[in-house]
Length: 124
Image (spheres, rainbow, N blue to C red):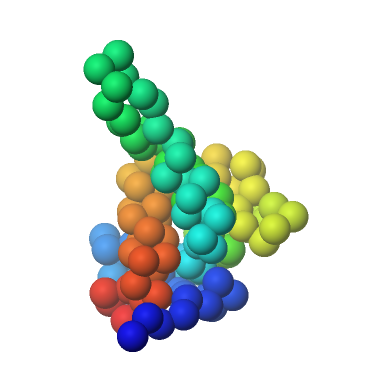
C-alpha cells in the first residue's frame, strides 16, 4: 500500500560528522514534491552516444534549494551565527546555499532525496 508523502513535514537533520556533539547544527528539511523531483531528475546531459548523464552539481543544488527550509546553530569560523534566508517558496535562497560547503551540500542533498523517496530518514 502506498504511503502519501507530506511536503509540509519538517524533518530535523544533523550532519553525520556532528552527531553526538553537544550543540550540533540542525538543518530543517522537507520532502520534495513530485514536480520538484521531476525537475531535478531532468537535470541531465545527453552524451554523443545518446546516453544520459546526471548533472550532479545542478541536481544537488536543486534538491537543497527546494528541500532545505532552515537551520539552527550554523556558524562562521569566528562563531557568528548565520541567519537562514528563504526563497519565496520557503526553500533555501541563493544566499543560504552560498553559505554551505560542498560536503555539507552533498550530504543534505542525499538526505533530501532519501526523505523524498521514503518519507523519512533512516536515522528517524
